[in-house]
Image (cartoon, rainbow, N blue to C red; front, side, top):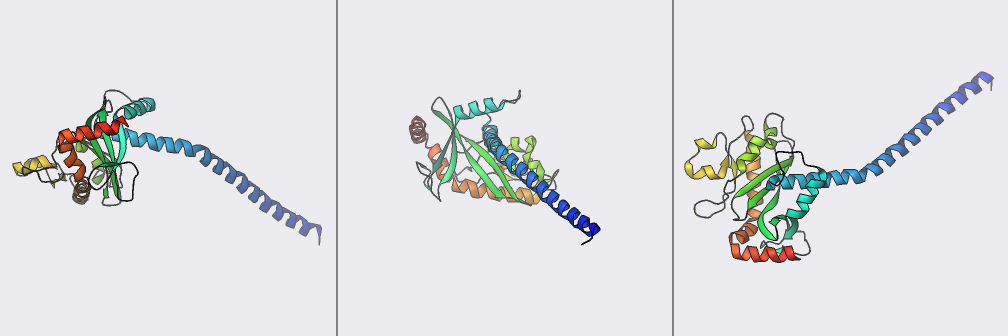
Length: 247
């Protein structure tokens, strides 16, 4: 083999070895970075979850920026995560059919509860939390932390003006029947008086998003109705929840 051919062959081997070496080095770096960042990512996810729960419950101060440490402190002081069975009773060990529930409390006194919302949207899932007052029928707040809706249209479901409309809405009608909370196709003021307590203003150009969110809320609140019934029975719910908080 001529020197020229040997040189060409060696150069090809060098290029291949260099490429393999570079790929190996970057692979190790990427893997190491992912491993080191995993814990931080999990911490950020946990913090985001706590923040959204507190926002739904109205426990995040609006007049100042809240630090991660303050979020954790407020959460640990006022929120308790539990699971309930089909009767709305808290159970020790979660099962495949149990429901996740968050109790809002102050000094061992129940103030309300929060249910997780996960429903169909126009382009993907909508995830959030809806908080209720102790009466088991009045919405205390609503937060949305994940969705795939169109910015400027359905994406407005995460806007403060939209979410704040849910505060004070009722999920029971005059006959104490569950009717959930829906999104109107226009302004609530255009609906009959008897419906206005159960709807919020719709979003222009996002009729389907409003429809899917309405359906999802009704489906979720129907599943959690046994919990709401217990809270409507004030004496029973207070004794029941105080026992849980003392554990």
